[in-house]
Length: 392
Ligand code: FDA
Image 1 (cartoon, helix red, strand yellow):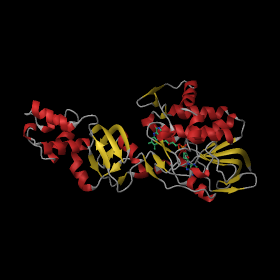
Image 2: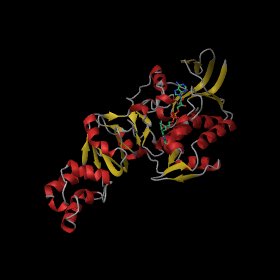
Image 3: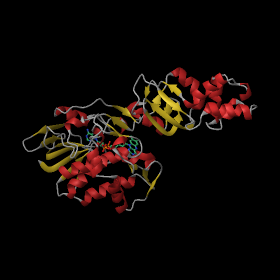
Image 4: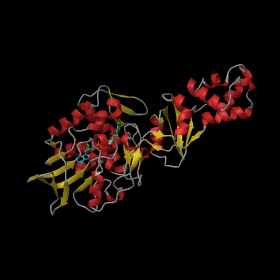
């Protein structure tokens, strides 16, 4: 029977980082994954260029039942540490926007870098390997994989969340947590497009494909980023962000011309250029198709000179404070991450170890720590993986 100091289940961002760090410390490390290739989510991330970190990463950018849990790991392993690693491997990168760092060329470079580091530190990798069962033994854990068994002093669960089941996402990590008596908070798709009911979709049909810079809010939380009308509802960064906060039955409020007081602007246009059509005035600050649809919906078919204040107010509200109730999200099929997961109450925030089960660790997305869109989720994977790597 093969014996290891550390077995990591999941060759994703968190698992590979943990394995590298444990390998550096001289541990005998095995990484197992049921997929054909390691780091598949890294490969498809950031449109193929991997938004590998965010230089502004701070605890405020993460959602968890215990917002303080992520502080320790994020302090111990910072974006600058990952940037130093990327630089050592001569991977060219750039900041796109809002502190988001991307590879200039390909996400594949990040995977190759992690694999090179694993090799350099003697980490073994076994792909296409399914773990059928995990048992606690006196000195650690016994894993069965069909016929063969492996014994590990430390077991690290890095199997990610449930998003994109087509790529091999499973609830395995949550099952292991439950098997060992650890609580799991409610999980739900996050960073996912929101969907509308059929009637509303029909009315908004002409807008499919239209993008607008917007402020999208749910309760007190708001994001200023691009928003996209789709055939199913809304998408784009601002909507993906708010989907992590929105709950079924709730409304979102959308300002499609943030910083523009549309009522005052329309009144001024009425005084100064009254012979313009309302849609023409609106199209100075929202896309033409959107301007036309709002004007038509509000019955503003004539010139702005003919529009009374009451009508201008309705139009302004439709632009600056559109309240709409999504019926759902596109779910795990397209969600970038899973909200919720292994309850942080059961874990040590410095090491990611299960407090009640010596030698068992949970890292990355399987834990109830979920980042905003923009490189935060990888930073959590690196930081939590690195922290566990120092302890196993
Ligand atoms: P991850 O999911 O990466 O890895 C888990 C591994 O466990 C996988 O290799 C899987 O095959 C394996 N596994 C699962 N079940 C198993 C089982 N039962 N047995 C064996 N192995 C098993 N984030 C970001 O910061 N910047 C970005 O640009 C993007 N872009 C992005 C795009 C898309 C389309 C998605 C879906 C997601 C992103 N993300 C992102 C989110 C980011 O990909 C995610 O948060 C991290 O990959 C999580 O890393 P983990 O290592 O925790 O899990």
